[in-house]
Length: 353
Image (cartoon, rainbow, N blue to C red):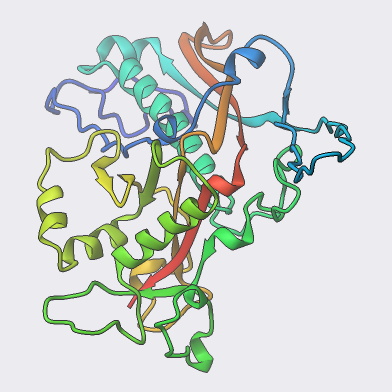
């Protein structure tokens, strides 16, 4: 018989901590692969770890090169010092209570299990928010319209990205099929190219075509070929696996997920898989065969130098509840993120055809 409790007491209300009936094997939740630490840099972490809420980052000055003719008077250029800011303005927390009697009588270590789950949820929350930010969206998959601090590039939009580096249906000249009146939009319909196809489709782009174009955009911005990455969702990955490419099929026969990394080199990109990318409406997998405006997914690629993250508080503490015989465990995560080089980020809005 479970130990008695006061009316209205709801902590661990199911009573499954009792060792009388239940197995000692506790089911642990699956963990999504967190990839933010692998695709962003923490170069400015040390500058803000102990104090302050803003890091002002000095931009490299632009230098003008002029043609020279013998006898020409040389004029020196005045350098312009400009900067932009990384603001520590994102905070998440958790707090839960562990009753002394429940902890003593439980057949599993609920304290450790709950703390582990809470730490994962904090990390996953940051992963989702940062990944969607650098794709141009909010954590809720709405288009981002709020600049973090100041723009790194004055030409960038309110999402801090360059319009020229956003792929949509109009980016692919082979697609001549227009969306119906009920499904107007600019997402790119994507379908794998199967064996036997002799010409490019007039209604879809292939997964490899999308990736190759993303690489070209980075090339045109003089982004270093070393250190490039690409984050894809499971729908896009499935179409990649269907693509007519023996090399690709062999590459995917590796050892499986390792922090989201599934392929070391495809068109110059490290390939990651994540469920935390923006997914609008019903997402990319249920959109139909024409361009969409309300139901699509977004994939994002870039360079390791494109985005910075910095953590200021990442702590967990335990204290006694003054009103009961229980421990309270709470934790907080305070961080910031900033797009440093928008020219080194490229996105593609797509839907599965």
